[in-house]
Every structure is written in C-alpha cells, then in structure tokens.
Image (cartoon, rainbow, N blue to C red; front, side, top):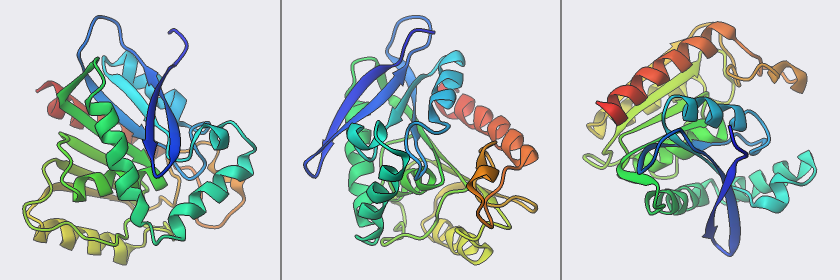
Length: 240
C-alpha cells in the first residue's frame, strides 16, 4: 500500500492533521473514520486503517491533538488529552463534529456511507458523534469511556451504536455500561452492547501490558471477536 495521505481539519484554533488509507479503485468510497486512544495516532491506528482499506473502505484516522503533539514525545499526548479532561470532556463533541464535517466533504468520500470506530478516548469520541446526531451509518466503540456531559435525547441518534466493553475495565465500569444502555434505550437508538467478562481496559491493544497499570491488559478473545463483529457492522451499514 502507498504511504498514507493527509487530511486537515481546524478546531478552536488548532490545525489538525489526519491520515488516509485508500482502497483500490476509484471513489467516492464508503468511509470509516478511526478515532485514536489517549495515546494518539502513532499507537494502533495506522494498522487499523490499513486493514480497513484492504476491505474496500476509505479509512481516515482523525487527529484530535494536532501534528506537533502526534509527532512529538509520547508524553505530549498526555498533556493534549488533559485539554479535554480539564473542560469536562465538552470539547470532545465539538472537535469530533469538526472532523466529521471535514471527512463528509472530502471529494473521495461517499457522504451517505460513513461510519466511525474508536479506541478508548476514541470510543468516547464516536459515541459523542452519535449523541450529537451526526449523519453516520454506524459507530463502534472499543473499551471507550462512556460518561457524557450531554446524554442523547429521544430521536437524536441516527446511526447504529455498537459498544464493546470489558467487565473488568475500571475506566468504563459495569455501572457506567448500564447507564449507557439506559441512555440509548431512552433515546430510542438502535444499539448493541457487548460485555466481555474477562476483558479489562485496552483489550484490543497487544501492547497494553507494557503500560504496567492495573486494569489495562490485552485480551485476544475480546480483540478478535470485536473486530469480527465490526466487519459485520460495517458490511451491513456501509455496503448493505
């Protein structure tokens, strides 16, 4: 596959630079946004957009921090993440929507066939897109943080919502998973929530154990099952 191309977006005075992996053929293509974890674009996301492009999707990895952070020292990502934490995560929705607009208007994107997937922080981002009523076909959250400053209102969610969660995840507890279920039910959303009993946070990341933190570890079963489910969701939502 050719080197990744770039796509730009601006929000709140910050110029953001995402990455594009293109499938074979000519567009416009069904498109999948891939939203990174708190660790940034360098971690896990590039491999994901390559896999999605091989499946025939235009895959766009969105940058929530800015290229200076993404290309800087790993510690810089923590500081950038705190920008959202300090605001009570309210800026997540606005920045995610800015990215959705940049993706939707890209000339190679079929605007009627867009989905979004995200890991950890990125899982929170895609859920915020759904809550905001973005015109997506589906969102998929992997071990995403689930709390929100503005729960979905009845009729607001226009897409299929899929959340893969770990029963042993300290950052998205069973209580918070149940709160999400109630929120989506009350919002009359179409949704699927899967809870893997032995999985903790970052269960899709083979390098999770290197972080040396309690409640963060890889789980091969949860990883492979959630990806297989994602392929099905995308096939039905974007190709059906």
